[in-house]
Length: 102
Image 1 (cartoon, rainbow, N blue to C red):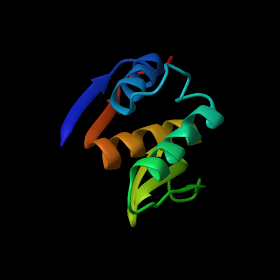
Image 2: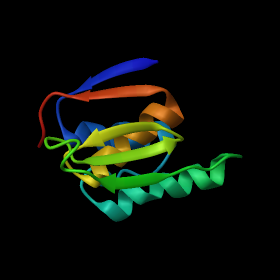
Image 3: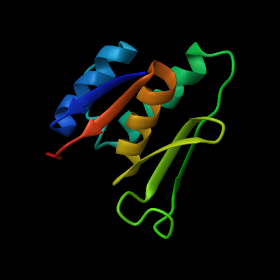
């Protein structure tokens, strides 16, 4: 698995665009844009799995969790961030570490 350190959400948006061959959009801040990753997965995979939920009790600092694989989750401060991180990790084998946010 490739590990990439990012300094901003803008860099996350660019990485999503590059790895999924999608137009540059605010994937990390716009839920509608982030959900395009689930559509990409549906159109490009034989086996489709997607879940997103909020659990402030389990994850108070990053309460949103997203999954593109059964029982495999990535978290984020917002749903779009969690979706982006999970899609990159489980669909493109890229683990993203964001050191600061925009």
